[in-house]
Length: 197
Image 1 (cartoon, rainbow, N blue to C red):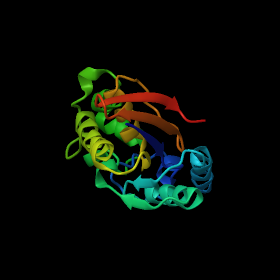
Image 2: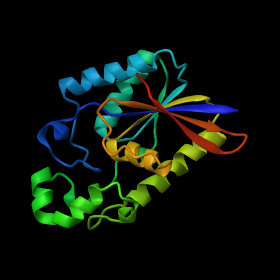
Image 3: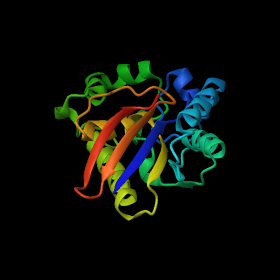
Image 4: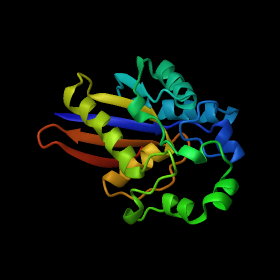
């Protein structure tokens, strides 16, 4: 049996607009543009027969997921495993502050080079940590849920690291973008089918 996962990044948030690193920060909300991007994501998912929307519990993802859920008329639930990467001491800082304070560490953390997969800020997560927790959740939904078409409201790093785990380098995922993954229960194989547009 094939299961379809449509994973979308939240719409533009106040921190995105201000150039701040969000991570687990939960006081960043959708801008007007972000609300429009959430509506656009919903229109991309309208004909996908989505049975449930699973969202990160962070406000910007919840807001996006709620808009999508209402438009496509699918119930919404939350799962902490889809939360954005914890960037520890860098959370809430402006990108220029992070570059000044952390220099090489920040460049390594932003790099798609696999040798930096375990790089982390103090008190934060690595990209490997993110990949492990996201795929733990995805595999659980793929193997144990009754749903065949699942949407996930997530974040930029969680999406990029989902793709990196499948050997697809896409370091920057636009706000409101939707990716399509398919899981084949007959061979436990994940496949990236592209961006939905």
